[in-house]
Length: 367
Image (cartoon, rainbow, N blue to C red; front, side):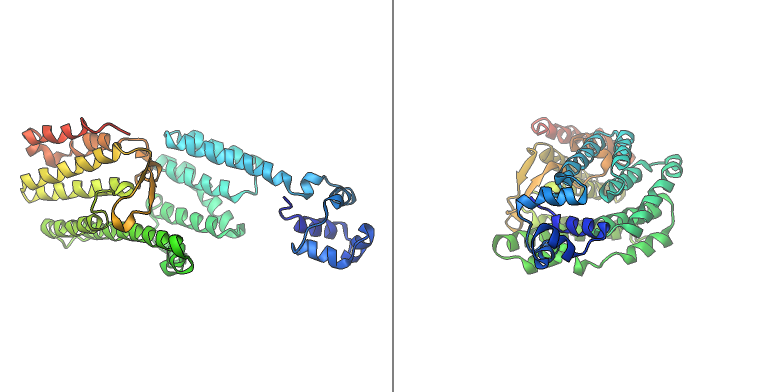
């Protein structure tokens, strides 16, 4: 109830130019009582609240921080509306929602950091980069200069790093920011298994198994993709290694949050098989890709992992690792509209197996 009331008393007392001793005499309490209140070691009795409010010329609600609860509800409303508009592709309206929120709460860095994200998502072509980049950079500089919340500062750095690299083509600046980020060994994921016990410890370990398997598989595929010295056969071998890593952690196929990434891996493998003129193997990968998409689409909104290494973890469809522009798109549509039409599959597009592959979606409705 009395969140930060001690800090409020100290702030009001110092602003009024009153000593702890003088305030104690006015209230008829000891100087130690005032000290304990201001240090948060104890709270003033309820009957003193209106007396203190009158003495400082404020309201009991302000002194008891009730205004903070009202503000928090309003801020949360702006955040929820932002995410709702972003989820349906109304990026411009989402950005305007946060700008309005910042007008009402100019000191709230969460809103400013979310606005950075909205602007980053908006930078999808040169014209919008030119339009939004100055505002994005100014917000980032303000957050890093004045915000003391670690989580907000780190997110601002992440967004600046991506913006400099992807939108401004400034690799040097992006790397400078990346090097200023904390190393993985001091992150939450490494600390939680150490400081947790019982089920919480097991859950933290399983979260790491899931995330590290995804990171490792993704890094292997990326290495194969950017290494110009590798031929198609070598790239395919690396992709197969990444696939085995995922399937070792999820032997029952409950990849869930990694379904889109795994689907794209299977697509890449099919492309490589076509480059090697291995049409049947390519069709096999396309079928696995379609089954992965269909299985995910058929899931309910919330699912529980079943593979032994991750069977304590729950999954919500909103946690799917997928580019923002595809957040509301069923994986079936991505397969049909972005995978199958690739030119490299033209030699097999009239194969009877293509029809069979597409029929996978008939028995798997979107959940």
